[in-house]
Length: 388
Image (tube, rainbow, N blue to C red):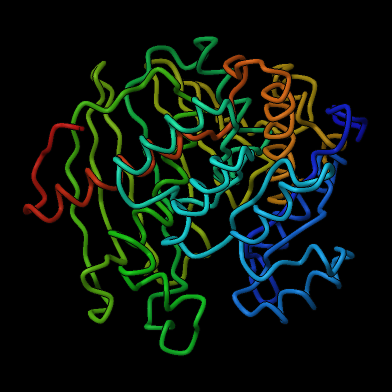
């Protein structure tokens, strides 16, 4: 149970790049980081417009002198201060993630980065090597992974409650972009521009979320090969896809599927993950994140609820309020930012951070690698490709 007591000796001095006024994602970063006193927001380069960024920072109670016109100036000036930032969150459009994360690591900073970490496997491997060289934490905001019932699923699978795992069925398929909404929405428009968004739209933006959930629940699974078909049902989005189907074969014979879509008309989110074993199956749906469906063959289906004493202790450790009270996405992000903070403090003590899971730089690399392989398969006629 989380009671708000300190997880780190001193709040980590923290800055932000992006996430300013009008940026939907910025608020959840700040809410998650500040909730448990793990971080203290003391600096930022919040906006490409320096004056607008400074005004926004002032409204967050950030010293105007520490509201910088760009990330390069922030890293340079903060490095001169004894109380300079120790970590930075990157909440900017996709094409800037690599350069900002690399610069932050070179400046000796920990990083929390929006996904994708970058556009190519080569870039991602460079960032992995740099993070390891500097012993810096890089967290990726796969924000759904902090839900308590994801940890419950992880423990049930590890304990053998499902038997031998056979299949993993994943999807993130909403309907909010079933029409060309980007024509009137700037925050959506860049997501379908390959120069800004990268080599994919829904594969990277949506599909990597349930894929990471599967990596948390089933850390031993390794993809052997995959086949992907992608479509642009709104033709103006081509060459980026707004719908994709991916089939995966894992090294141990387990099969997996991912449906990634923003044109599933009528669907709110449609993000689910179902893990099927020889004895039982579990299913989690992000629109009802406090429940986990548990189906044992030849028995009535059970709904496991967050916060209840019958859950594994590892799941209850993330509990923020007693059972029956709903927790949501902000709590999930807060749980991840707590993990980031603990890892950062360990790294600052010179420890290697291998004894805990969180969406780290290698998770960012795997997301980039998966998208690359999906695009390679789809663009060669939806053929099976060996996973590289």
